[in-house]
Image 1 (cartoon, rainbow, N blue to C red):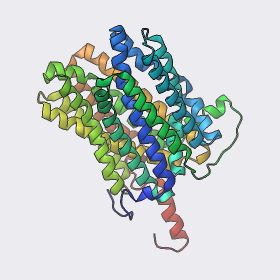
Image 2 (cartoon, rainbow, N blue to C red):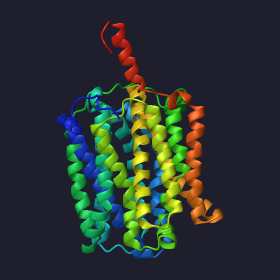
Image 3 (cartoon, one colour):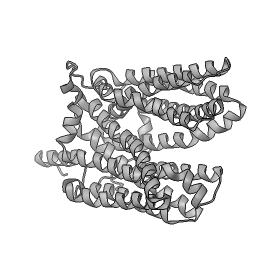
Image 4 (tube, rainbow, N blue to C red):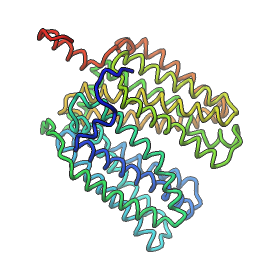
Length: 423
């Protein structure tokens, strides 16, 4: 990592728009994470069905998968800040509906699933707009620090949210929904208070061609395609975190508290890595750092599958989170820097599809292989497959694995040299 960029990791907060945007995002993420704990407990108390717990995820993912590509197109046609604000407003409506259901004595579960479909729809429209708007919030030279600080703050909210939700649930689900609603109100107000730099908007007619423009753009850029697909297949094969309940019970012989710590460890690793990246952004040997991060993720998975010691498992998960954060950080910078602003929403939607598919399919793959090979062998297979993908992708995409600087940095230095200025 390089320290060549002046300033510290928090200097980017001097930009009012980014400070307001980051606050809105953290409060919104905290509210959603708190709410997710209450929803799970409430649904299970109502039905006692494990299948219904699975439907919680499906109700959110199905509309996301259907709407994500059109959402990317909309993020390029309309103001992204307004899209985010309206999506946060929809999430607020979901929280208020859940609060109303609870106060009136909810006895059936289908209204909760209906609310979750609305939430998943809002998430679909919000994700590409959120990924694409950040570069409009800060000067270009501050973007890498803004991205790192935004990622670390989000991971902290993801870590704290379930814990706070679980503690507040001791006073009843209505308390969780009430405080979540209050946080979302603040989030909407803060987002509305931002005034990001104008984005480039091309009002192209909606068609299959324009909807698929992001996919065509990614396919035509080997560096971007390699980065996104590397993350897809690494997480697809290395989705061992889905097996943590079984590992905790059958291998590590720990209870629910220990399982909670295991689930928290990757988030802590990712958050601390994000803070480090905010102060020391990666500017050289970018390809090596990215492949190294994925390799650390794979090695951590192998250690997790090999150990019967709780502390070693915690360290392995911590390193998996840190390694994953490095690859995510570089991939996101590549996508945002190399994408023209007028199609940034559609390209971000493609990136979101890859991320969503890798997470969902990775959990499914881990469950299937565990059923075939056994629990420990499935985890070891996932780690080994991740390392194999890392090696294969280094050969398939040599332009990515050997990349020293981000392409936009090389272009800037070439322009300075051509103008007779020192690089």
